[in-house]
Structures are given as C-alpha cells and as structure tokens.
Length: 229
Ligand code: BEZ
Image (cartoon, rainbow, N blue to C red; front, side, top):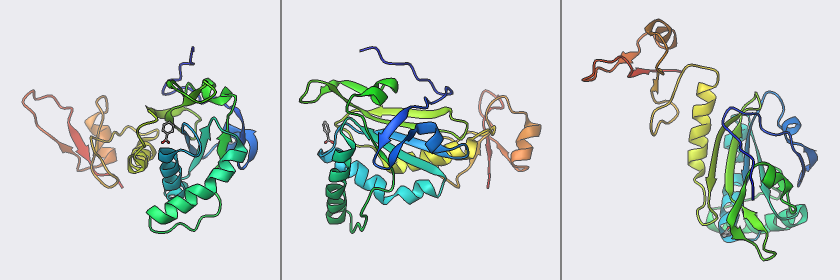
C-alpha cells in the first residue's frame, strides 16, 4: 500500500475528522496559537492501548499546561471509543492508584475506513485485523503553532509508548521553537542547553552571557553550553 511521505517541517494536513468531541477539521480545532500531539493506536478494547490511553487521560494536564492539545485515532468507531473509555477508566483506577475520570479529556477520532490513517501514513501493514484490513501503528506527530510537523515517531503494536519521553521532547520543542538552541542527549527541563553550530559567540552571549566553551582535542569551537530560563 503506497503511503504519503510526511516530512519534518512540512504542513500537517487539515483533515476532516469525526471524533468523540464532534466533527471538525484538525488544524482549525488545533488553532493558530497551540501545539498539537496527534497520536494513533491500533485498536479499541486491546490491552496495551488501554494502558496508553489511560495514562494519557491521567496526564492530559501535563500537555494542556504546555498549550499542547492531544487528539487520538484508531480504526474503530466513535461509538466504540466511547464504550471503551469506561474500561480505560476502570483499569486505570485499579492499576494506577485512582482515576475519577468520567470522559476522555481529549477527542478520539473514529477512522473505520482508514481515510485519516492512510493520509498520515499510519497504517502498519504487519497488523491485519479480523476483517483483513491493516491496523494503525502507534504513531505520534507533534505539530507546532505554525502547523508544521516538528516530530514524528512510529511504534509497533507490541510496544507501548513512554509518555515521560513525550513530555520531555515536548519541553525541548517548546524551548527551541524559532530559537537557535538545541538540547543534548537525555536533556531534561532545567538542564543546560547547547548552542548549535553556525551561531556566533556574539549571539551565544545573548542567550547566556556566561555560556561555557568546552575545549576538545580538535580545538574546534563547537561545544558550547548555556543556561536558559
Ligand atoms: C494492544 O493494544 O495490546 C494491541 C493492539 C493491537 C495489536 C496488538 C496489541
């Protein structure tokens, strides 16, 4: 099955969607000032997906506090999503030390005909369902206020995602958006950042007057670390 090529830095398609919170075009729902984390999961009423959506429902505020809107998708119907939500909350309550949610705090898209999944290249050809149509992978797209794709990742059905990492990468994207900054390996909010190559020392001082140059055997001036608020 041919899938579209979506690249970092290209515009996220403004697709029409049917969801548990009504029908709309994705980018209009996102709005011009917000970020969006668009995720898919393979199927409702399945074990790993139940843990993932339960976790996201419980930490939704971590994203809304950062002005990131969550929206999910699977190849099931909106009605299935609504019925499944009760199981998600019951499981989260039993396993995660309490969950008082009565409805999902973000919309879930119903995509039985796979039209949205196909447009976003989220189909996992190795995961056919009982009707022999392939399911969606565990995809994540993070889209900026400028509607451009800032990050995507695809996980297989067998591996649930790590949502601490999604918060961490969101913090990096928010910090570096339209700025000449980069975050190093295993960076966490509050840690020092890197000044990318191509930024003059003069401009690096505007980021942090006390930025640190790390000397290395090559004597090349490319390892510069800075504190930012
Ligand atoms: C799961 O969520 O556990 C799952 C869903 C589809 C295929 C395999 C696993």
